[in-house]
Length: 372
Image 1 (cartoon, rainbow, N blue to C red):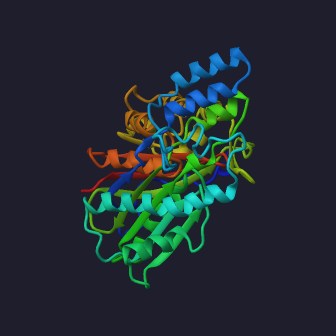
Image 2: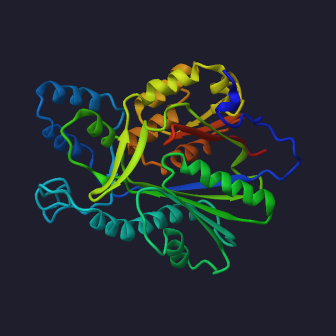
Image 3: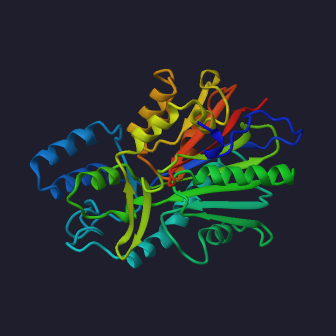
């Protein structure tokens, strides 16, 4: 297969003599209400076919997810927002306007919690650029402006808002931060990913949409990227797409929120693609899998992690960081990879690869290594 149809296939090394940007630290935050168990009970009750309901139970038990967190308020009696008196308590679920009102209020709050966690790890003085990624809501002025104002950042701080890219938006955000630091060596770039997928729950009687919904939880992460050799050195980015796959992952904006379409074919298509050496090289930025000692793979779901691990013949513990993030939080869209990178900062990595899959079906990533 001709690798050129997949996208870039650049070397993971550095040969241009330019400065190497570094990911200094990551701060993370999740809301305090766990919605996972309540959702499972609600979703099972939606399925009229007893056989499919039992299958849902088995799939949920095998999902590798123990907790998912939501910004949605609990009921007056302290119960879950799924149920009478809760946000999702009526027969007709809330419209997009109601969901976006909560996004406008809660997304900045969660983003600032993540930034606060980051500030406990590294000083955040002298920020020159702010990059915010979010695909689960819209508001104007944007989340970037709201965050900048509440942080008291100077009006001269350059802002970039990355919207609606999906799970690989963290790659796009960090890639842009890397480009900025390489062109402006004194830059200090604050990168924030904040996602509230639980605002988009949808009633459905069919198995695939409900299984897709049970993956997602709310979360935020913040990182500092600068030139000083601290944390993780960010290598060259890469990007590719899987041919004839554009409909496998999709967001549709409707009158009742954003409807996620996550095809059950995705893990199999990823595994089949990675079986092709040219596609595998494109997905890993040309870094041989056997030489990688740090895998930061977006925790999109257990079956996706299994597909990557099996297709690349990785060791049984190679994706443990991703599996821990999935178990503790579910899939938080763009924020998820940042949670995994936070774990990578706690170890020494000689050659690492970060990968995220999302709408397209696209794979994007970059190489990384512990600072020298």
